[in-house]
Length: 425
Image (cartoon, rainbow, N blue to C red; front, side, top):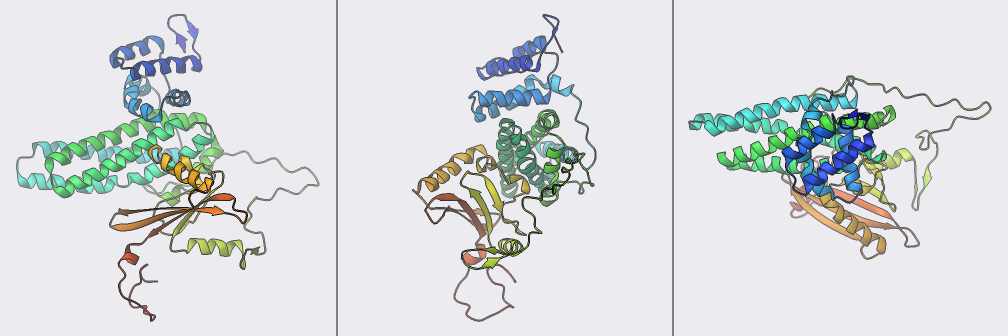
């Protein structure tokens, strides 16, 4: 790239400095059109990776994540012509990025149809056409609910790999927008339930605009940044857990084999290193009460009627119970991740307050309960301390207690014909 004024190649560092200066001017209330012209005069083009690097540097230099989030739509508008000129990353079927792009293509079709239905509701001339439009919008809303799988793959699989490479700012900004979209989808459902046409149109147009903007940010900023940052071994980790989370709007992706160089052969006379946690290791583990093999421990934890997650004394997620019907989804990408990075920005303060109280000994438990989808969910946190009283981490226990709360009277005899609080077992 050439600096038009001096005819010399412009480094990435120089471009990022210009981008940061423009965003600071935007933050200070600068005019978007003037800043667009300033950008065009100084920089021929800019990549999504460079915008991601700019966001990261701004956060590292003290600009709050919330401010970067507020500016996100505006700075994309400033650079939109340059971003539109950038070619889309090329991947092969089965690659996790290809899967995310295919999901976006399906999502774009749903958003386009939803926009047409909302436009028809604004001009509907009779009760029948209104009813038909609302029914179709409700069907499309149900399809939009699958966006949760798409966002979970980003949050639990892609974002951790970027964090390992020192890139966390853009991910946190996006996660906050995910939560806004989740909340506004609930608002749309409430508007549909109220059968308020004006509210349906207003809320629906808002949320599909947010969703469409997120698709643009993914494909023009996040995905190119990920391609430039991650290697094949990183993408292999992103792929792991994809099937556990599931696919939104598309069939399961075909097999994909990353091209990872084979490890060097061991020196003559030496034994190959064994995996750190080999399941083939024989023998039981001596516990305080009893002996259990690793297989038995795993069976025990995955068959408990509660979901369990364990964060060690360094605030690192080291375990979760992969139960068949987890209340809150988890995937292998969270293992080894700081627990603060597993929560949206607005929740981090609460998490850190709980951990600080546990670590200091001020508190040993914290309890919350919520109602979601007609279920009553109890969420409890417990400080874990060893025999000397030293803090060794925190345990999260989550349980659907809807049926338990509804119990009345007594059951003293075995009765398999009548379901218990957890259903027929």
